[in-house]
Structures are given as C-alpha cells and as structure tokens.
Length: 244
Image (cartoon, rainbow, N blue to C red; front, side, top):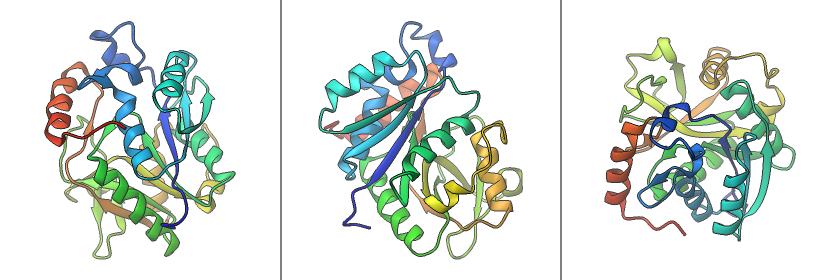
C-alpha cells in the first residue's frame, strides 16, 4: 500500500453554528487559525501524506471554500460533492461511497481535526497496513481529551477497538476525527437515515463484531467553538509546521 497513492476524503458539510458567534460571515472551513483557513491544515497534511486527490463534501454555502481550495492547492485533483446533509452519518456515508467507487482502501478526515502532520501521515500508513491485514476499518485515537462530548474507546491487547461510547468510558482513549475504511465495509453500510450521528455508526460497527483497528496518535484538537481557536493557535504554533 505504501506504493499506492493515498486516497482521501474530507467532510465539511456541517453548519459550524457555534463558530458563527465569532465569525458570522465565514463558513467554518475558512475560519482563520494561526494565519490560515482551518481547512488548509488538514488538506496540507493529507497532501504531504501522499494524497494526489481529495474528495470533499461541502454544503450549499461552501462554494467560496471550493474556490479557495482550487487556488491554494492547485496540484490536488479535487472532487467536490455538494449536499445539505441531515447528519454527520449521512455526510460520512456520502464521502465513503464516493471513494469506494475507485479505491479499495481510503482515509477520511473531518475538516476540524488538527493533528501533527507526521501523525496524519503515520495514520495513513498504519491504516493501510491494518486494512491489508484484514481490518474492516480504522479509527485514530488519542489520550488527550479536548472534546466536550468525546467518543470513548477501549482497546484490546492487539490494538483492536473492543468497545466505543458508554461501553468504553473506562478505556482511557477517545477518537479524534481520522478514519480508515475498506470498500467492503462501505458496501455494507446501511442507509442515510440509519443513524443520527457518525459516532452511532461506529458504535454499532464494533458491537456487530467488525474488526476496527485503533491507531494511537499524540495530542489532537477539534475546532468547534470560538474558545477552541486560541488553543488551536497555540497548538499549531508549537508544531511550527508549514502548510504546503
């Protein structure tokens, strides 16, 4: 898989309601963080990890985001999907199905997941290996709990996810916005109305006995609220990473 280009997608169809308090005129992906739009950080990381193309889901208010990305990342082959989805699960399902049409294994990120560039690249490599070795999918996990409503994870001795959510509050890990999927797992996804939230899908997948590999990362952050921006800027300044 290391010789195969990374296939990647980004979910950015949410309304970003909480960030409107500080940036009422900007769609969430364009909210500035450490001098660059939020979306640039994950796009830069996926490009550096070896993704020549990215499938991105935007809502109907995201056309400015589309123009920005085409200008700022001209070397990436962009496929833009546009839909005002009803849930994070529907968004995730759309991007997964778009990628599975041409890729046997792929990685998806939320637009607001901030992680060191090296960690994103390592997740892509290790997810590919895990799925080649029989995992149905992969979840990035961290011991750094920043989300106000974290999705808890408990791992077994082999690094497979043994439980998620309320079943795993004692597990010490939380998920952090990076996902690996196989075409087989995607083909077996139920309909867009099956779950209210993306986390509900993953909880059900683990309970149903899917083999979901956990890939531990270091510190990661989500940017959901105005108060997250200052922490994100300190985090990124400490990394001193380039965008392109």
